[in-house]
Every structure is written in C-alpha cells, then in structure tokens.
Length: 76
Image (cartoon, rainbow, N blue to C red; front, side, top):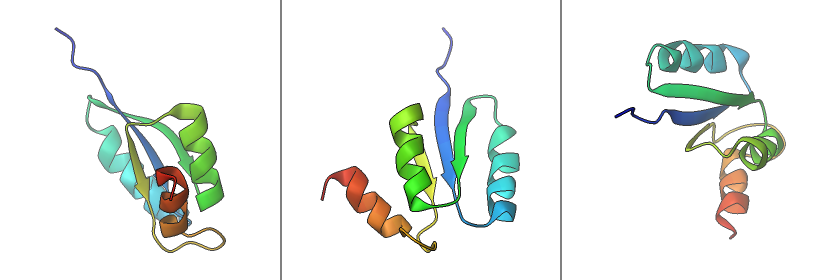
C-alpha cells in the first residue's frame, strides 16, 4: 500500500525562512510542498488553489497577519 503524501504550503514574509522550511521538509519522501507565499493574502489564495493538508503560516507579517488569515480560513 502506498502512503499518501502530506501536502504542505509555506507562508512567511522572509524568503530565507521559507527556504529553510522547504529544505527541511523536502528531505522527507512523504511530504510535498504545494506552494509558498509571503503574505496572508497569498496564503488565502494558496489554500483556495492548492488545498494543502497543512499550512505552515507565520503569525507576524505585513498586511494581513497570520492570525487574521487564520480567522478568515476558519470562517470567524
């Protein structure tokens, strides 16, 4: 039986942080990075378009914060 891959989107306003997370997570065969973004607005689009299983989201970003983005995604 084949194990399904965990689909992850990474959102952080610092490119170096995204690259670090990507490097760590890409080393695992059961993880697929389905998208990256630098803002809460980009996170919302990534979730709509790619439907990741996990959203790795920075809390503090310019514009829409990660907390505000989470509220939008949760429908609050």
